[in-house]
Length: 64
Image (cartoon, rainbow, N blue to C red; front, side, top):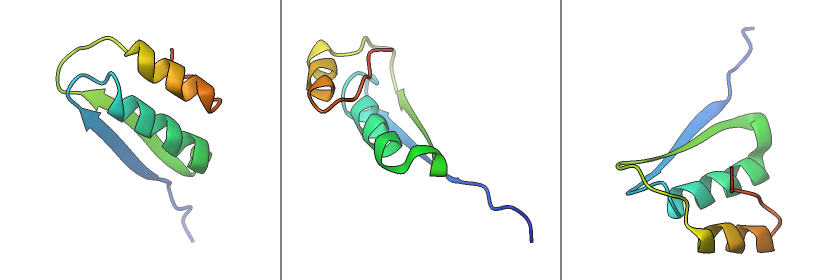
């Protein structure tokens, strides 16, 4: 039997600054390498400092 590849999820939002980044970090945290996870934005944007702080409170680093 062929090895089954992991599923994949793409989270997208306007600037890839808050929602999509946070959702991707949570999905990676809970599912690890069982699912390929990526985030993107429709337009280029900078990561929101508040989102970074909120995720740090629960032990997830999204700063890079």
